[in-house]
Length: 281
Length: 91
Image (cartoon, rainbow over all chains, first blue to last red):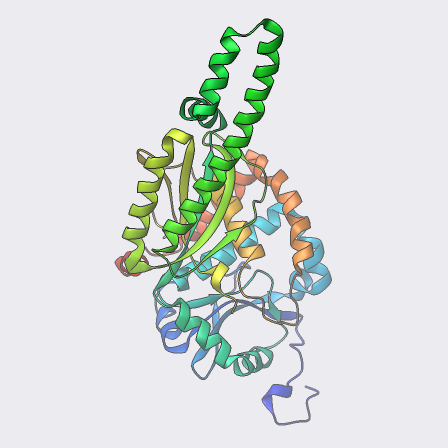
């Protein structure tokens, strides 16, 4: 041990080539109670979850080898998608376990400290901010809302609903072949425009209505242009929902989905998630 | 389900959707991309995460690999006791 100072915050890095992986931060009393029961496995095999506590806040951690989780090692590990996916799943399982039992601040994947003193110091320095987040998220979970649109259904529906399009279609029927061709082109452009407007309106409506049943929302980026059996993914949101409000949130989503079904819009809820999207201040 | 995770597709009918592929991608997006960033000694930058997603899209489209990861998830869930406390808290 090379530390000459008695202050524990000055302790050197762990010398055995390991560090601490941090999953989430919770209320100390609640975290200590949770680990009395069974807990999921840690991100690495054969190690147990540990708690590092300072005052009212506790970090949920486990020991990881720096040969895998050191800065350079981690960067190259992350290029292996299977490795990344499996470890991200394990991170999620730990956070979910605590989040379903108490209020936690979920951390992003890959937060590693060299020693427990560094974590204690971080908890101390950020105590006010972290406690505020814990309280803000208490009793709440995140629900994901994915909005899909089946283009064919929407297009058919728009032609039937739009007086302008109906009129153009009638005109095309009676026009000469040359005129009909031009009109058909115009109809297609008009339909595409109206479809865009309709989708934007539906997305706005869904956001606005569901906001009334939540404590916050954020629009998320679309990871990849997905075309599923439910149509194309048009928008993604995350909502922070009080657990006690979930039934009304879900009912509102269901009602919206029923109204919009004819326009080819489908709504998918995913969750309950730990409040990853609402963890920052 | 042993996990508090639930995924529902809402339409004229409410059904549990086939969650495998989507929940994998959704989970990865949450864990790798969201969550509080605290200055640790080691933290991954967002730019790197975007690169990871490129290869993850390949992973997710490979059914075999995706299944491997989901089996991993299932194993983790088995390690957890299904407790009534869990259900009570998450609802």
